[in-house]
Image 1: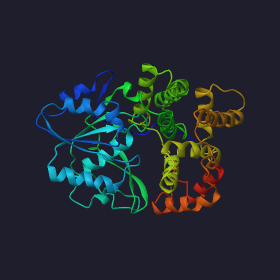
Image 2: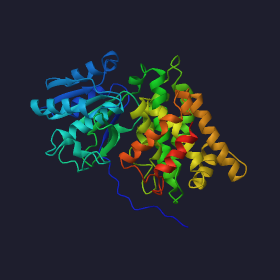
Image 3: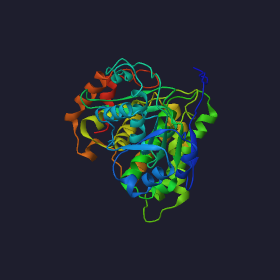
Image 4: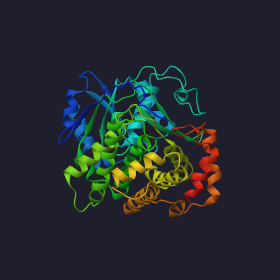
Amino acid sequence: MTHEIQNFTFQNPTKILFGRNRIEDIDNEIPKDAKVLVLYGGGSVKKNGAFDRAVKALGNREWDEFSGIEANPTFETLMKAVEKVRAGNFTYLLAIGGGSVIDGTKFVSAASLFTEDPVDLFGWGVGKGLPVQEVVPFGTILTLPATGSEMNSGAVITLVEKKAKVSFRGPKTFPVFSVLEPELTYTLPVRQLVNGLLDTFIHVMENYLTYPVGALLQDRYAESILQTLIEIAPRVIDTNHIDYNDRGTFMWCATNALNGTINLGVPTDWSSHALGHEITLNHGIDHGRTLSIVLPAMMKVRKQQKFDKLVQYGKRVWNLSGSDEEIVDEAIAKTEEFFKSLGAPIRFSDVNLGEDVLQALVDGLTRHKKVKLSEHGDLTPEVAMEVYKEAL
């Protein structure tokens, strides 16, 4: 069967300010009469200087702050920020942090002006999945490369009361601008650097590892990001020898992995993220680490459905040779070795979880209407259980 590149429309309105001393330039990006709410997580943005520099750059603008956005941002916490925006008539938001803070800020941006119940911004069996209406404009200062949220319109939010970790997006929830200063990564602990590398790598894989459609440029763009990550990863996690170019390259890889360019006109498969979200929701395992557990198992269980692309991945990314079957098996093994070299788990047993937890994970997928996943829509709860079992 011959496949062709699908129709696509592409527009990414986010302005990127990359390099040294770019926080100071936000003064040129935010309206002079804006009333700004600065959102962040914990104390790291104050330790690394980003907060003080950002506030100084705001100059004479009126501003206030909202802190405490979690590593998996919760609807419940974010609704407090929404109340603050509404009560204070804030006209601009500034997120300082990683993907969680930026995702949370996207929700606050959309929910603050939403005339319906904000829970209805979500579908997935949680709310009505209504479209975003108007938004409070926002910019971001990225401190942790991982999710690509700084240059896309998507967000993943945890609804504690509904026991759901689900996404929403809309054409209006792109950041107006994002600051990418590689030096802001210098104080990150190894665990967070590893999580960011894993998330970036697997974002690319979920846009790439499906079936060929003749999208030669998109494929090679994806493969170049994967090869770059494999090359720089050992140096990025060596916190005794920090290199500006390596950190800048990592940052730009993470952004390009999910800013909408590598998936134009090609099929995508977000099954690994869907299965990983349930692990995080139920057991609090870091998002990146759930992906390193799920992806290799997904590659094994779905080997036949993804065979042609697995061969291409093995040849181009890992420079493997041999029969197609040998290349595929070795490519999966190489992927596992790469994750292990970062100190990441590749089995449930690596995080002390066993078969007794699997049914609850599958039940969660069903509850959140994630029952026809994959590029073919054929990854049912039964297949999800196979993948989870393979990961034991």
